[in-house]
Image (cartoon, rainbow, N blue to C red; front, side):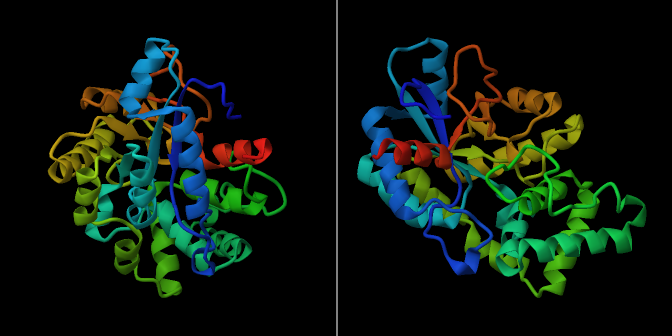
Length: 312
C-alpha cells in the first residue's frame, strides 16, 4: 500500500483517458484523475528518471524522488498525458511495444478490445468452447470457472475476468495466438486498423522525445518473458532496442517486462543488452537492496486510493 512516507518510488500508468462505453474492456486513469495525481506527486516528490530514482535508492538519499512511467506507448498518452506532464514540468518514461509499428496488436490489447465488444462471461464461454473443440486433451487443464479465482492476481477484477486474462497469459503461445486470431475473425475486427488507432506511431513518439520524454523498451512482441529461452528473449530485446534507438536517437536505458514478469534468463538478457534497470509490476517503494533489473512500481490505483483516503 502506498504511503506518503515512501522516499523512492516509481509510479506506472497505462491508459490515460476518460472511461468510454466503446472501450469498456479497459480501466483507464481519467484525465482529471491523472492531473490530480501528477499535481500531488510533483508537489511531494522531485520527479526524476527511473535510473535516477534507482541511484537515489542505492545511496539511501533522504530526498523523496519519484519516477513516472507508462507502459505500452498508447496514443492517449500523447493526447492526454503529455499536456499535463508539460503543465507541471515533469519528465516521464514511455515503455514502447515496437511490434505495433507492423500493425500488430499484442495479445493483452486484443483482450482489451474483445472485452470491449463482448461480456466477460461470453468470452469465457467462447474460450472454453474453443479449447474443447480444437484442443480437447487440454480442456480440463485450461477450463475457466466463473465462480472462483484461479490465482491471487488481478484482485481488483471479478473472478471471471481475472481468470480469463490469466489463462490467456498461461496458454502456449501458438494456442493463444490461434484463439485471438480466431476471435478477431469471428467478431469481424481489423487488427491493423485498431493498432493504428490505439498506439502512438513513430512520429508521435519522436514528438514525445522532443518534449523531454524518455523512451524505454516494453519488448517487441509483448509476450510473457517467464521461460528460460534466452535466445528468443535476446532476439526480441535486440529488435526492440534497435527500433527505439532509431526513433529516440539513443539506446533505451530501462526495460519494462511484459505483464511485469521475468525469468532469470530474460533478466540476464536485459542486463547483458546494456539496460541499466528493469521494472515489473510488484507494488512498493524501491530500495538499494532490491534487484535493479526487477524494480517495483506503484500503480495509478494505489495513488488514487491514497488520495481518496486522505481526502486530497
